[in-house]
Image (cartoon, rainbow, N blue to C red; front, side):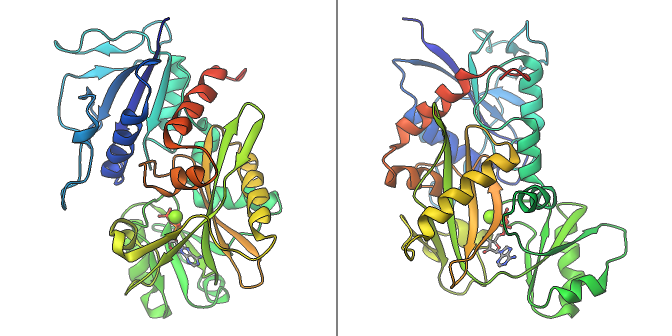
Length: 357
Ligand SMILES: Nc1ncnc2c1ncn2[C@@H]1O[C@H](COP(=O)(O)OP(=O)(O)O)[C@@H](O)[C@H]1O
Ligand SMILES: [Mg+2]
């Protein structure tokens, strides 16, 4: 039996480098070595592609130390479908063709269509959404347009570009508080909850430090509930939803709250009034389709007291450690972590790159 050759791509240039490493560690540990030949490829924070040790134990958080991709034998994937992976220096032999790439990358240069474009050019099937859906989901301003067009509720917002005047009247009309966020951010980096308009300019500066395109968004009152969508041979399927609650001194689900375990409580599955679970699942699949997602997505909602749903955002490569929300929601829905990884690789292998996927 010939094994399928899977390249696991992780790390990357975004601020979510470390989280990507941890996610990749879980994926490497879960891939069935009887069926898959695995190549681990790390992308350093500088963007250098290197052969990485295929060793999940090096990709965990130990104490307060976050994992990262260390320098190693350089490799490249040229945008030439006849070539495959190329060693750029000694020690990186034994490369060549791979059957499928699993880009376990979060944020810019990974989840935003850029690496997907490279993989399309290289003619290699890959896990997850293509160029357009990845880019559209990454850009919260663009995603809103597509979601609204689909008839899903999203928070009203005003777009602000670095160096251009702010439409203060439009911002005032949003009421207070507002959330100021980079259009293409992640992990809550650059986000400020503004309760007094005197703080608006400072919040904009914080957001501009990661993106010249920023959204000022009306605050939505509601519980934060997430739902996983997974591509199956019969089409996209939604998981049971899960709720995130921030406990302690955090105003919202910010970076610290996300990665300091004690600050968040996850309830899987979420305890919701009758009918809300089904409504969330239907809305999650609609959001997935509206953006043209493939493979997987985590759709994040606010659920109002009256059960009204507002889509906050769609993540095309959600946190993927074995204890992350997405895998936990699937575990609660009957799909254990190794099965989930397998389903994603199999879904990727069912299509070809290009338009005739
Ligand atoms: N419009 C909003 N109303 C209420 N809370 C919000 C709003 N926007 C963001 N938040 C809070 O900030 C967190 C991070 O915002 P989000 O848009 O999901 O950015 P990221 O892509 O960085 O996760 C959310 O999980 C939520 O707690
Ligand atoms: Mg979020």
